[in-house]
Length: 296
Ligand code: SF4
Image 1 (cartoon, rainbow, N blue to C red):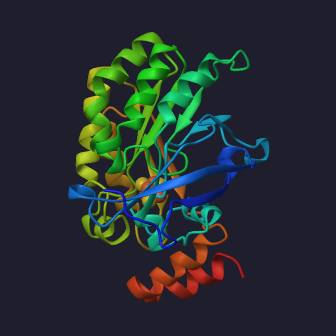
Image 2 (image 1 turned 30 degrees about the vertical axis):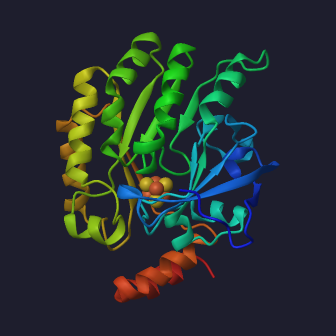
């Protein structure tokens, strides 16, 4: 049910595009605000029409991919360390609760993708998903934009990769199997930073249980979808004990993970203050060292 904005009309959202969006300025125009219901209760859903969905990654980023698609902005998985939080500032939102609860939905993402893949300028390069908010976060259960994007990319035989913390990717196993049959550059990865249940509850409060994620890795690989594990991020003093890392690596090997990639916590500007504020409440004994080691 649409909910009126404070001004009484639809909002204009100016979107100064983030790193993965090519650093361009863009205007989504009018956003329809919808209150989440059922499983999405408590979320504010902002329906926007994107002018384009395949975004170029700036060369200076040094990332191992040139193109991304992110059908959603904000992420209700609400990981305390999330590096993508500052992207919400481009919308004029906060990087804390706003990022967790106000989710931008590019409702025309699939139709835009079809048009962009048809363009003579498109060269069929690999596209990465899950680089800047989770494509299988809870809103995907209703909107199915990631599902439509996979279908579209598979039909075009365009290579892609997906990174997620959600078991919802398992819903699309058949589609992913078909995509991998068509193109051997299609692959997936589950981000599983820890199997420690206390750490999971503390740091990733709304993600699926890490053991369920590991089971998803096994099922995707059994089905023929190459799926790796990213141990991301490794949190100093919280999830970096050798036995904690070893537990994830062992489980990933048993699940048939095609790759196992650890990534240490990186606190960029904006996220650092958010993380330190959380750390001072949750694990105050770790805060001074983290503050000293993560910049001025
Ligand atoms: S799942 Fe990924 S994008 Fe979502 S909050 Fe966690 S780290 Fe951020």
